[in-house]
Length: 250
Ligand SMILES: Nc1ncnc2c1ncn2[C@@H]1O[C@H](COP(=O)(O)OP(=O)(O)OP(=O)(O)O)[C@@H](O)[C@H]1O
Ligand SMILES: [Mg+2]
Image 1 (cartoon, helix red, strand yellow):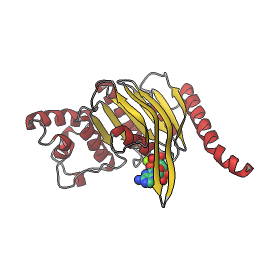
Image 2 (tube, rainbow, N blue to C red):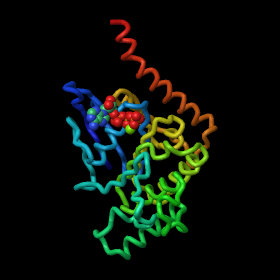
Image 3 (cartoon, rainbow, N blue to C red):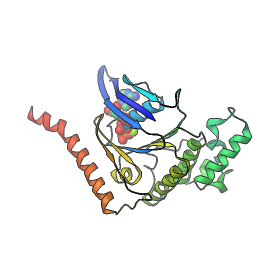
Image 4 (cartoon, rainbow, N blue to C red):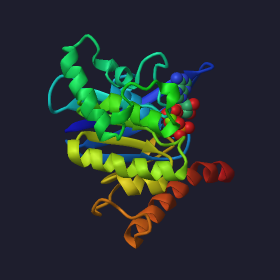
């Protein structure tokens, strides 16, 4: 279990303090899949970077029931591969020199098989499509055998067909390996299709936490899923309208 309490983050921009996150509480049970959804600029990446230990929050605490620092896998919106290294070398990069090469090779082989790229281990990144490159980025995170797999709009740059396939594959990988996943997206359909829990973020605040108790694989046209999608969208539209309404009134 991973727990965030009262997380706050302010940035100083041109001498002004900007609150990117305020009072965020989040529980991430071991093996769970949480989707964080909200509009651009609401603080999703900030929250993910704090969970990853890449940024220090200005207030609040993080705790990990396993003790110590959890192992983190992070998938960015773009693949960020090293063009001079093979697919296999890219996938194993995070472990390079830290454990014996045979163990790395074995883990890389398994991870590439999981993302459907076994035949491309010796290819270079320029020989891959965008979707394949993003699969390598996912494999690179899986190779670390992370306690927490953090994904920041990982399918944002993909076409609708590839995106759908990758969503299905991610669910399969999660069910096989059971990492604790936090998946950031601004796409409400994607959030309800993937998440067991949906954290609704608006202007730096968690405005809703919803459980989606529907079996996997999920069908995007399932009326129960569409009802969740509508409710999430309504809440996000409602909460992001409030500050504006206040401004107009005052
Ligand atoms: N390094 C930084 N310095 C100053 N302000 C920042 C910094 N990083 C983010 N911010 C501000 O924090 C707020 C939240 O940014 P964040 O990147 O977390 O949003 P986001 O929800 O990930 O948006 P998007 O969907 O566009 O990626 C924004 O107002 C942004 O301007
Ligand atoms: Mg972002």
